[in-house]
Picture 1 (cartoon, rainbow, N blue to C red):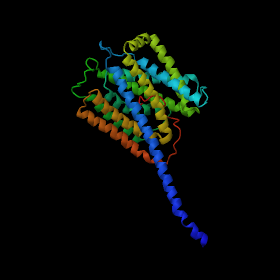
Picture 2 (cartoon, rainbow, N blue to C red):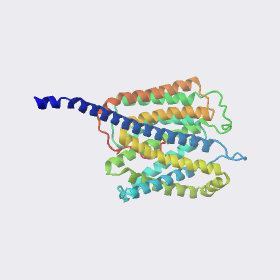
Picture 3 (tube, one colour):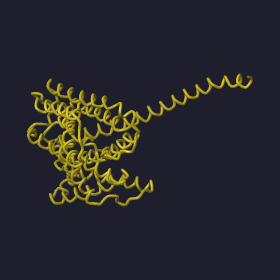
Picture 4 (cartoon, rainbow, N blue to C red):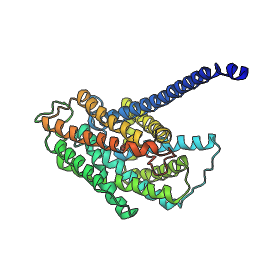
Length: 358
């Protein structure tokens, strides 16, 4: 009896410790989540703004436009390859290729075409149009998934893909009657812009699907894949610049316009940083949380671009945007129950390339 009486006060203390431990766990989770959200939102918002600034706003008193999209790809990829190599060396992980080199090359070629179409499209359409159009990538991903991975999709997947595509179509086809931005005169071409965006969607869908196949076919560490893919991209983009005779003019443009050099340097830095924030988020919180953050980032990017670069939106574009983001958030909500019961694991099928979605 004495022992029982003496043991009784221990129960509230243990319960209190459990409560304190639960609070500490929640604080740590909230801190990690805040770190991930802040990292992704800040890097990709800066990335988006700089994309539009470099490709659409002239530099210097002569009002020269930067025309060398492939040079931006080269700068982004060489920065990422250097950082990934340093990470591998610092962690003492193997730098030997896991998959045959030609498979890394396939991903690199597709990714270069994806990013080049993305930059080129900004010459002809506004950043809000491009950003919302990226939401329609579900359709090409499903097509490539069926062809390459032999995947089967349910009716719900096709329904949301069609709804998002409808919203994107409204946004693109019903622009505001007047764009007051002083940087757009004589450079718009909806046909060319939409064609380049269709190219972007097709190549991006292939890239992510082939990467999915690559991760599932080989026991591949993510930084190893980043290093070899970006190294292939560096060699291919450099070869393209030399063949097009764009390397010297691009470097000359940087020397004549130091502010452009600063923009490209920051663009490459945030593009690299965003990859590591994306990897951290998927590993820690899963694909669903990452998808929700990316959807929010796209919405904020559109609003920021409309204010910063003076892109007025028509009421039909607002309707289209509401349809797209409403469908994306609804899809994330409907998928939340299966995700909660799943064990979070490393992103074997996730794309480690910059957020074209990026």
